[in-house]
Image 1: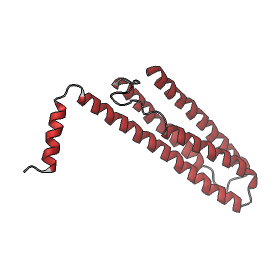
Image 2: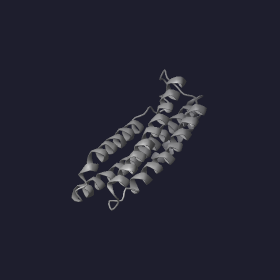
Image 3: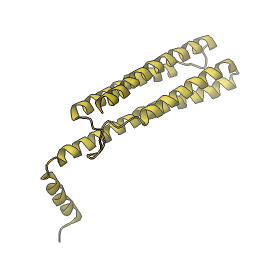
Length: 168
């Protein structure tokens, strides 16, 4: 008799003959890719947040207590942004969903999400510039710069939501 692989291949061939199934499966693949990209972006932000938490410990040991509230606020802002990105709308629902986005729009959405990677790299770089040996004023300046980058990222990401709402 046929193997499981052979049976699977026959089902794939059979499904390929049904009109619209290939397009649906391509869209589902793109949807999954979009989700994985956003999870990756969120994970990058979480790594940056972990760096900041390590710095918080160092600052505590160095008795730079005047920075703790600002660092904690930045860390919370990063966590909020990571969650916002991770749990954003997928961009394309299933075949029977009322809200659908065409493939061209999904491509634009994916490109938009990819472009956010540059912003995340800038935020991470700011966190890496926060040298525990620097003065509190220098570190405070880096915190402010990171906050500004996060605010900019948040505004850009809102445009993604606006695009989703407009396309739905």
